[in-house]
Image (tube, rainbow, N blue to C red; front, side, top):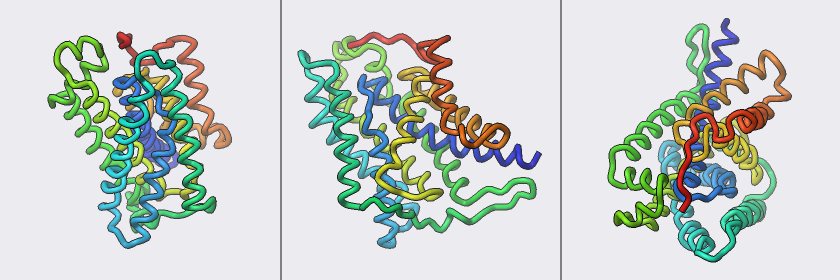
Length: 291
């Protein structure tokens, strides 16, 4: 029983990290109609900034917010100077895909040049502190991840549902052309969306990496899992990304204990195949007008 409960707790914590990645991806796709293949490298950048800041005696909690904001600003630069230009009418529909794929390779190469190939560690005083609840043990880092996850999801939900910009984002995701006719500044919404999406990716990098090491290639698996979650949950569905991310974390954790840890990373892709076979739009997907 203790093993089961511990596995469930670990699965929830892993799922929270997956959700942050997947929600960032689904925002950029649902509103901007771009699958950002450089998302994992922006996750990696958040982790490397955490290594630098904490190595220079920045407080951990300051780093948790400063690093994602800086990476989010890079997301604005990417959207304005690359994505916006390759999405112009008359250009190939593959241009944004190729641009983000190129960014993936460029950023990964830059990390190798700047930081080197050797794994580095995010020095976090909470990573190994633990709270013993008798039948459960929760590390301080897991507690931080859980609290910040709920705070971020609550704030993001409130922003999207209650604020003027959030409602504009929902309108653009439903019908870009009608939103334009209603006077919504589409370019501003795209910029805001990229900032939020990239901010969430970097935040995941800062929160998850204290439990592991940081190297130029750590973004590959979070990207693939994030894409799996987005497909299973439904392209453009934030709710689907949240539900699917948590479920994937639980499935991986429980299967690692009761089936085999060797197949841990395969469950997400198995889910993708099953969902595409029986519900191609995803579990909570919806049909949107393209514009």
